[in-house]
Image (cartoon, rainbow, N blue to C red; front, side, top):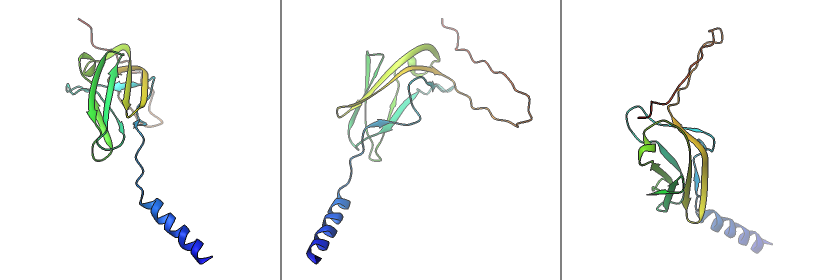
Length: 137
C-alpha cells in the first residue's frame, strides 16, 4: 500500500512539473460584431491575444492582406493593423482571421470607429450622442 501511495505522489509531482502550453486565442475583449477602436492620434488599431511564447501569428484582413507577428515571452501577441483600415473609422465591415500553429480564430462583421464610454448620475437627463465617420474623399 505504501508503494502505491509513493507512486501516486511521484506521479502528481511529475504532472505538476509539466508546463502547459497556452492555447492560441484572441483576447476576450475582441469578438465578431464589434466596433474596434481607432485612436485620434493616428496610432493603428490593434488585435491581440495569447499563445505559446515564440509562436508565429498571422492576421488576414478581408481574405487579402496578411500581417505577421510573434507571441512574446509573456505569452501575449499584438498585431497592429496595416493600411488605410488601421487608422480611419469605417462603416464597411471587416473580417479578421488570426492563425497560429494550426489554430484559427475569425472575427467577422467588425467595424472600425471611435468608441466612447459615457457615465453619469441616475438623476441626470438622458443625452443622445451620434457619432459618424469622417467624410470619405
